[in-house]
Length: 81
Image (cartoon, rainbow, N blue to C red; front, side, top):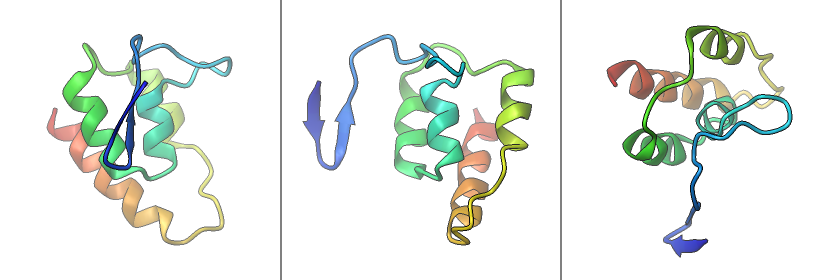
């Protein structure tokens, strides 16, 4: 693992899901981490499946109201790919 700015560069596999089946890209989206989403989109071989994306889109919004605009920006990036 290397540090580049405030992002940590992860070792492959970048698309490996965690024990809940959430990929790093979907986790970054759910938490509104725009820069991480941008970085992952440039480095992953394929996007999550439609069912995985739908599950992430329907994830409950935490009480943090600042997260909604960040999630919207993340979705815009993902949809451009």
